[in-house]
Image 1 (tube, rainbow, N blue to C red):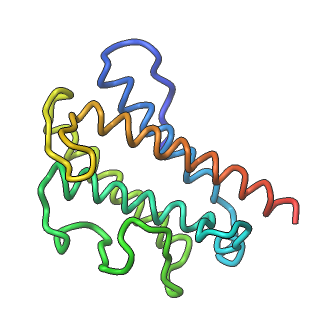
Image 2 (image 1 turned 120 degrees about the horizontal axis):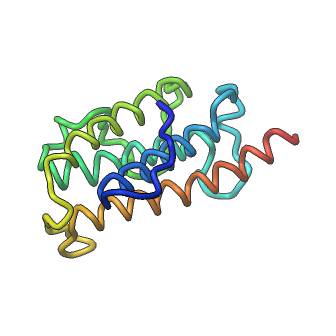
Length: 160
């Protein structure tokens, strides 16, 4: 799915479009990489191209499935107790698997978010009371930041 840029209109449409564009940008940083290159460690942290996508899928689950939908961990797409929210990717997870996990989580997030008005709120243990508007903006920020990380890693990999 390629989201055309929405620059005018309803606030919600603009926010959701920007979030979708950042989701696409993040995935775009890893398209065409081999599984070996997607796991290539070029920085000290666990940040690799594949781990950025794995982390983004976890962010979708944490914010939309857990917080907004109130789902139990066992009801969340792709959830495992292993390092939820970190950049850890299991050895048996392929790049295609991780992309599919992120895309599934993103689709579910869209459905969940649509149930709430922008001004609806939930209490988050780390952030305090947050609105759906704030959550959408936080995810825009999160995925834009990680797409930038992915761009830099991809540039390094492509020039090895």
